[in-house]
Amino acid sequence: MKFGITANPHIASAMAAAKQVAARLAPAHEVLLESDLARGLDRKGMPLAHMKADVVLAIGGDGTILRALQLCDSKVLGINSGSLGFLAEVDAQEADGYLDRVARGDYRVEERMRLKVTVDGERMFDCTNEAVVHTAQVAKIRHFETRLGAELVERVRADGIIIATPTGSTSYSMSAGGPIVDPHVEAIIATAIAPFKPASRPHVFPATGQVHVQLVKPKECVLVMDGQHESTLKGTEDVVLTASERRAKLIRFRDDFYRRIEDKLSRQ
Picture 1 (tube, rainbow, N blue to C red):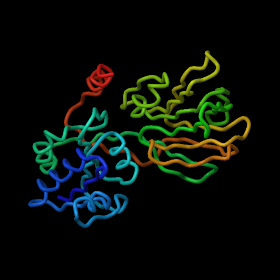
Picture 2: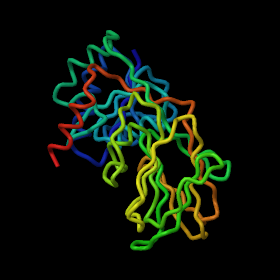
Picture 3: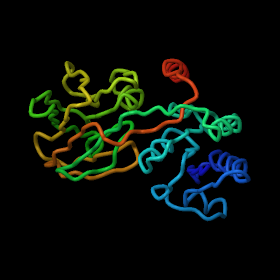
Picture 4: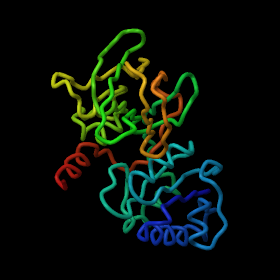
């Protein structure tokens, strides 16, 4: 079996876990290391986007897992090596037994919707969690307009607009007051960040919809995709979000979405 491994080389716990996992797999399987990780281990590596692995092991936190899902189309197993990783399926300390199960094919693949993001027709990075359009300056608000297709949904002055998937509903969107949406539901969630209008509420749209985010008056903003990539906007652009044809593929051994929520919230 061909395994790919990615981890943040600047986090000691992730590096240690990656080294252990690579050594555990190497005798029986082909192991591909992402370039930065490989340099830290004094091994040969390759860019994550070029890996053609059966399974990619994303070792670290949710950011590492989101990056793996964003850059490759392989099945991804999230291995948590530090604080609570909501997307991670196993902890680094228990990884050995689960790696054996992966090698035997004893797992299920949970496919989740991603957002296709375009700016004036140019395709950007797909998002498993969310795309955020927010102000480019601290303590400045912007006047945003959200549409579903051609229909105006809301004009609101706010720090930004979060457009999230059900997977992302438990992340930034939730912290801004958005609803928790079961990942089996196909939907697009729009939540304003610190809206000036108290009556502003999050909206949940069908995944078949086309959500547009624009500024009423052009001013510089920033588009952030899954917390991984940023793009500066002049403020005249039409940011369009739809369900992507590319699905996020997460390796799962259990069905415990609501237990994870309870566990995550109880640690706050």
